[in-house]
Image (cartoon, rainbow, N blue to C red; front, side):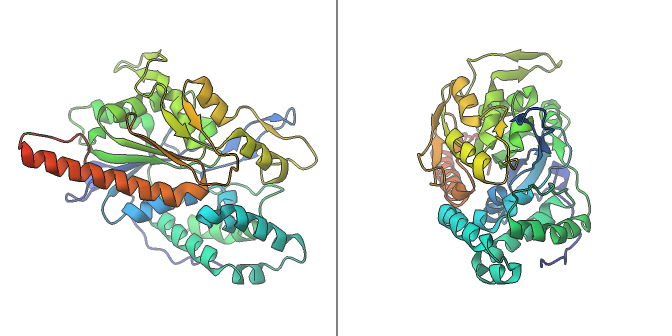
Length: 368
């Protein structure tokens, strides 16, 4: 069971709601809800969403120092993927061993209470991350369970849905709104005021982060304003959209010669995806299951230097300093990625302080 005791809170979504003494950070979450499949032929797609575990650590790490602004590509509510609530996905760098162990435990005579009792650390981490979500995200939908959804997560879903439905609904900016507000001289929301942006994965970004001109305009503007960009798991697919710019009058242009050309990054590798499509939750029982594309291949085709590990459960975090781009390869990487995000931000703050001491007129492009 999970705690359903919540407080009514107001989501921080704009400059008028921000604390005057705190810097800001932007969180962009996919609002994709159905993931298309190329196989089986004619399949309507599987219910999907974002992985909370790939975002909550960042919210917790920086929550006392930053005010968060939340957005989705279209301004609609994001959907929480129940598959991302699987306890083994909360094991951090130990995800591989935890996944194997929990699968073995669920194979025969599964008792959910005994199972949870054996994993108090994972259970506690999930609960604290949910409390963070209740406070900052409000009422959001949860994806439907799939035939191969983890047994404990499937049973957990009913309580989770009840808890989320009891919360007030919060507004999420659309990416287009962010771009337009940034361009409006009368609007206080400015992209240069964000210290960083973080985007979690799950499969949902494959739906609405790719081939999205306003995502491209957002990414390029953030880069030009010196804002650190952090992406994890499937979220790096948004870099395929970096080829796009959108003018003030709405004209869309595309060019391979953009701010992130040739950047180094990491993401979910195709061979890891194929393992999941063969034996994990995305698998359609009894049928060959394939996605319409694979994130690492799409990024390579777009000209990026994609780094990956042979073992897809091994932690990999890549920071391209020139592109000011930080990426991680999945939920196993979130702890290291949050720590690296902290290191980069602290280093930039110290550099800005030192530069300001030498030259009073100096202004750092990184906001703190």
